[in-house]
Length: 243
Length: 111
Ligand code: FES
Image (cartoon, rainbow over all chains, first blue to last red; front, side, top):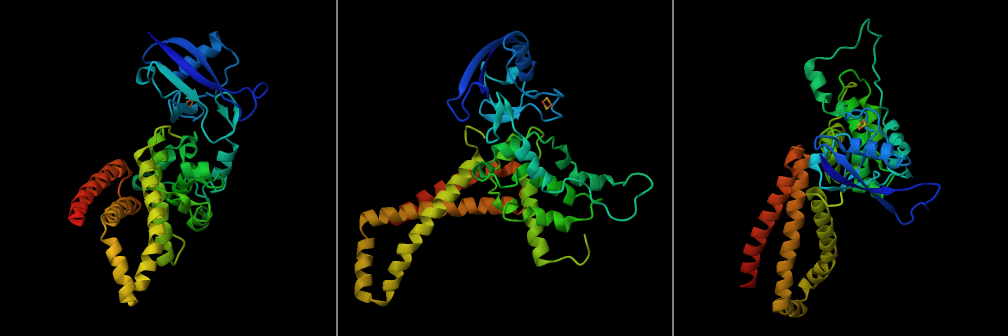
């Protein structure tokens, strides 16, 4: 067992002034080195301060609920082992998004951006009797992008998004790339139009923060660069058919 | 946000910062070129430029051009499809190549 100090940036909408001086609170928890920081947070809530607020759901790096800033870098609390952190861990809510309470932020601006890129399959032709199948090669093209759990670590770490909240942000751009690359999807034109506007991928400066923080190790900046190349290609060599 | 800026962010700041300074430099540069048609005034400018301080600032200009150009090549390679995992290596390579070229060039210039 190791003794971990949790330094948590707290905000209570009923007590604190939004944007006022941040309130830091410290808790000490005994932890097994192989436990995750999320376990520590749960223990604090259960035994020390029931008002501590954070999100969790799967506890296995699958739902994206527990994204927060851990020692200065966006990550998932359920994916960060106690042994891989210093004795004192500093936890803050995801930056840029409005804080609701403690480590819980308002993800609506994030999901609005995802919604703007048509995050659903638009298939043409008659409905097949069974599923629309893909070859392993076709699946391989989107395999990396479909790993996204929409935790928001990338978009909230992006300096461009921080400077301009109208920017679609890395998560939404990866979502768009994922459907453009999908062999079953029939509408790349509208998709490319949705992400190549003034708030789209041309705003990306290839700073690689998104790539560095992604808890699913998705090549986010690589996908955005691919979108840029695709737009240039389609401009100089406009395709005849749909695809 | 990462509290400690990553290589990609540093590269961006260097690229942007040197870009702005170079854009500002272009203005006096064009202004001086304008006097090429007037030998007497051009000669005066040339004499001014051969002063040690002016030559030192020329070496600084070389540094700016190297930092901006090499970082530009890095971004172009990455956006043209170079794998993201080498972005840090490319930044380090740009810094090392930049420093080597800068010292070699500055030595020639200050002779
Ligand atoms: S709780 Fe689901 S990702 Fe951490």
